[in-house]
Amino acid sequence: MNINATLLAQAVVMIVFVAICWRYVYPPILSVMKEREKKISDGLEAAKKADDSLEEAKLAFEKELDLAKGEAAEILDKANTRASKIVSDASAKAEAEAEKILSSAATTIENETNKAKEELRQQMSEIIIDTTQKILSSEISEEKHEEILKKAAEEL
Amino acid sequence: MASELTTESYISHHLTNLTCGKTSEGWTCDPYKVDQMGFWAFHVDSLFWSIGLGALFVFFFRKAISKNTDASVAPKGIQNFVEMSIEFVEDNVQSLFGSVKNTLIAPLALTVFVWILLMNLMDLVPVDFLPVLAGHIAYAVAGESIEWIKGPESFYFKVVPTTDPNITLGMAFGIFLLTIYYSVTVKGLKAFIAELTLHPFGKYLIPVNFVLEMVNFIAKPISLGLRLFGNLYAGEMIFILIALMLFFSSIPIGVLGFGLHLVWALFHILIVALQAFIFMALTIAYLAMAHETEEH
View 1 (cartoon, rainbow over the protein chains, first blue to last red):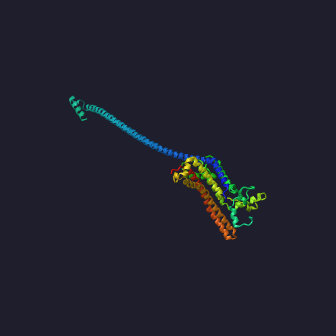
View 2: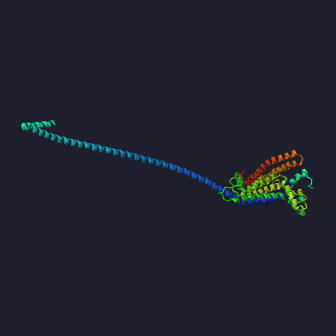
View 3: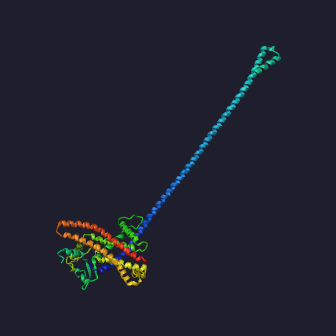
């Protein structure tokens, strides 16, 4: 357990080993570790960014979807109104047409009826006059004849 | 000489280094001539393990990274361990050193930590295993040619370098030199000398200040080295003493010895790691002090 030159030798050996470690061992290991650390932190950051952009995309998507839904509803609404308008227009038109047709038909019928009545009356009165003439012959004067005709006309 | 095994010879065998040095008759590793070697002697076993384990550290850490230099591939196996150690050291350096940029500190701390950890871990190898193995190998290989190897027992081989004060103080000395170097380069020589002489008592008591500060300054590396040495030496000593229990030809004591060995080895794992950590932390702290320009 004497103190001897071993001490100096060990000091020299230590300096040599420390120098080797300092020059050739430590820096490469540390640089690999630092590089990996950087890669990992970059990766994490990228993942976080991707997450954020995903969130953003989701938000944008939802917004678009809402907008599209609103638009669709609007279009549907419009279409509905339009359809009902078309239907009501058409039905109104049809009704009017029908009414028109009906009323014209009624007028025609009335006219025809009146015409027929007039003709019938004419014919009837002629027939009646004819017949009466034939029956009465000359028994009736011109005046009386006139009177009777008048009366008959009035009665009809 | 070593044919009869006594407790005393057993213990001293475990506590003696394989020392090689220069005597009047030239270089020798004869344990009986250690006294003639003086200062210029080397503990070959301590240096062998110290250099071997240091090389192991450099080799493994270098190999771990050379396999996978692509940062996009996940690390596996030993690389995980290596990166874990580096992260651990970086954290410690960060907390003790703060914002000061010095690229040497972290590699230094890493080297010191892993190296000391490996050296301490040699303590967990059963106490007799490697010395006896080394003795037999030495005797078989060189028993004929080298006259002082008279048997496997006469070849000393200490396994745990950190139980050798030369090793721990040597490392502390290296750190001490670095401390001085950074004190001078970072603070400047003037500020460094001022720090050593101008307080605590101001400029009129410079000699007193210098003595006080010098004690403070020198005590740091000595306590750093001796703390590690003391802890590991005591741990090794207890392993040896527990191993001695097998000397008594008594089965209960032998079994108790095995149990104690296990318990102490488990506890020692804690000391091994803790002392390596303390040495590293103090290394960082002392170097951090060297970078601070104190205002008093």
